[in-house]
Length: 486
Ligand code: S5P
Image (tube, rainbow, N blue to C red):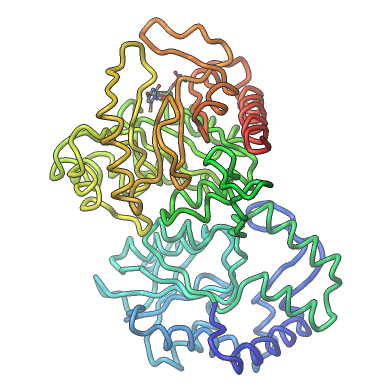
């Protein structure tokens, strides 16, 4: 948010109050695109009734592009349809930069173009939008712009609703720049007496339920001693990590009250998408094996990504990368699956040594690092136990904190709070399968070594998967709460 000088803060406050008076900022109960009811609504379409305010909004956006000109290179602008088109037109005039228009509905006649205007292959296009919630609308626009050859790396918006938009977009290679945040708008309205503090609290709670909250927590016991990683809350540990994926996952687990990762080891795209939609609200991450899916396609990926944004879960590809750097760079960044384009997290076998991480970095396509989960210990019967290998795996994680977000493990292997521990081989029946899988109860693994449980057939083969997911979610999260209260 751009509040770099007191003069800017002052004028921004005044502008917010003018927006409020004009009905651009509304308080009440409004349905968002996601279907969620929100106690506050920002509707930039109202601005066209107030030319002076429309111009002010354009100037605010223009200032962000100008101030960040060293990082935002821009050959052409695109206002996200349709609310941002008028304001974008004013920015193109102020900046003297051409503009393209994206059509939401492609015409059945004429040129049938989805993007109108001066489209040059490789030209850098900056998206202008009013508000960002999860980033879905900006992504839809970016997808169409990219299809015609434009390069989209930045989006500039008026208001960030702080519901994970910047993270989701970074994941797609787009950096989001906002003029103001929803919390700042609320603070300004409370300060000026326009918003009742009780209502502000309600909005704050609504936002907390929607978005990650990076509030730091002190990490000491009542006796002043440092807490072990197991005693610390997810939100406190989010503060200890510089890894964007680990941070996001810790915050998501805290907000969604879910430390359940589902292993969706199904082979039909339809079954996988149905499962993701049914249990999306109960999970923090959705793990797949792309190479067992029949008919894996770009369309499947885009549907899964849409569900991940609607239900707020991360996509986890269990590829278990295990080769020399140059090979994994290709396996990750290209080939049939194009994993780097859609996976928030991937599993990595440490056996090739640090070269495997360097290779993945080379194949990287997103802006938030590879989200690597190092396989430290496996759940299968007879898995090769080797103390030295585990120690070397921990060292690899410590040497690459920007790219390694956590471990797949079966025991308490490390004291460092910044990594997310994920444990598979979890089921409410501890019988195991006929091919070497061994199971432990969710409570046991959370108490012993895990932050998140990975559950596959316990959910996918349940009579009612959504009920099973709810049950695993409750049991795993309650075990985490019990552990952190000790
Ligand atoms: O050690 C491991 C590591 C992994 S990632 N043991 C595992 O079982 N996994 C994965 O977790 C495995 O590939 C599968 O996708 C999931 C466990 O599935 P379930 O049906 O046995 O719960």
